[in-house]
Length: 162
Image (cartoon, rainbow, N blue to C red; front, top):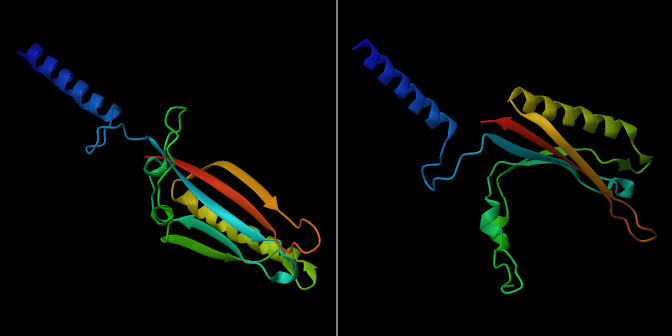
């Protein structure tokens, strides 16, 4: 009797642990990702005379990329019919940052102030269990006379276990 009970107990424990290993989404039976990602983007203006806008932004909404993806082949090159309005996110967090330039030129205090705000956000994300996985940055700067455009963009990509 004890052997049967122990066998049933071990069998039940095996079934329970197997169900945790193979987590499935009840709606479509796809495996649930064990890691989630979040992107925070800083956009810092490098427009002369302090005329630009600088922000730290992050989405509060989720989007499924597959809803806006089409596959092109040699046989079927049908155009992607996704609607831009369906892709747009209106639920996001926006933190004001200072511009790199003011009327006097480059403003190092503004850069340091932005660093302090970004550091605060990175620390808050860490406290929420997010780990900084990747950082990617780029810039578009003055292309010559008459081009008063310029931004410095940095994407902070976080991950955490579910």
